[in-house]
Length: 246
Length: 391
Image (cartoon, rainbow over all chains, first blue to last red; front, side):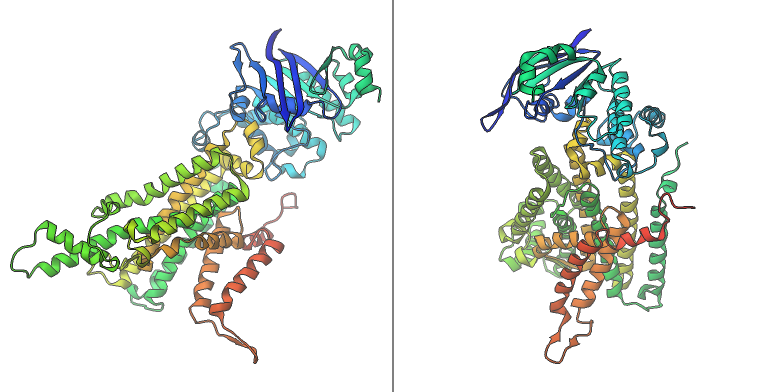
């Protein structure tokens, strides 16, 4: 296992409030990692920093074998270099079909003229079908995404991430609002995806994290409180005090 | 196998057939064909309307598809008109000056001719010198290039600055409106060298075609406008179909998400903004020779706002909707404000349409926005069976 992402000493504050405080974390490839923590622990801000939405005040974010810094890159450059993000609220393009949503995400040249003249996109129909099979939406390819159920939208978004073929997949509360059987399907999807790449899941729901059966990082007030297996961190007294004890 | 472009977009074929049919009917009815069932001035009105439809589909692509409510596209239209107008005015004045100096005892020197042309054109603003801005006005080729290049470069630079700073939504609209206002003030100034508030006139007289009657000329411009609208329609249908269209609409709906998919949103916006500006300018270059006159008031922000109103009434996000909106509203506007609409006498008050038309238009706009957000074009959805219905 090689280190894919190395975050060290990162801090960011909004109007004096320290959302992330000297945070250091390492993600290997492949790896499945869960990040848990109470509200305001800095989970979403952490993802914002990795994807280029928020610039930290200090610290380093180093990516890949070539050890490039992500901090000088734009959102689209970071996405192209292999970091995909799934938002807490499912954000698919509701006015467009499932197929259009997936095809848009497929790893292909991404300039306006590449798209206009259809450069190197011969197999996109097949790839879109493969992905729709994997997320269980092959019958809904020509439906508008807005007509899908909440759970289906979540899967479509995960499917779009898979289509991007990222090396690191950031997933924000994938199980929110899902029925027990939908949760099981989602767990399967994530565990399977984590065989070949790094997957970081931010989650509130301890039961869901238990099912992922992976290394857990507990965030509190913008820094790492504990790290290890779920059983290990749930026995940690600090963790019990700030999070689980309530 | 991938189906052909037309098979995937049947509305393009229907539109082209309709446009061709309309062109043939007007040609047969026109004075130039001998039937003379419609007047030359009405042929000009229809030709101008086609140009307005072209700028409307450009507006629809930038606003309805890409979500950029630009209040500057009618300024690009006007710049196109000025660019072609400068050549028309220069070349025509040159012909007149040379003809009038033919009987002079001494043959005129080139300097004398240039001075005479300058006096003719700039006399109204008390000058006779050619400003720098007219440097290429003797050349049709260069002025035609300017029709596309000047608005294209302006849109490129303006768009690059605005999109790069991530200005969006209503702030971007205000910024484009500021650009439009600045441009119209610039054109108003006598120092600019474009004859200030007089604008350019006599544009209906095409140099070299003096022998052709206005009836025939109006038909030629009508054909050119119809052709340009057809080509523009196919171009925009091609851009908005397929994956590029998919990304453009996605930017409208959630541009942050598109960024996280790895697309450089700013490039897409810049591409759409610039190409629609160029098409708007080409529409203007065809419009003003039919109108005969252009002045800075045409560029004022209100014109760009009307453009947005047409597209909203016609139906955003579908090209034929923009065509319908521009045609219906601009034709109704010239009917109501042309004094042909009968006033309504209420006994205690007479509703004169020249004054009340704007009120009617405003109310229509509010009603469409509230009750028919899809506009007139949305009515076509009722004709098609919805997806999932029995065949």
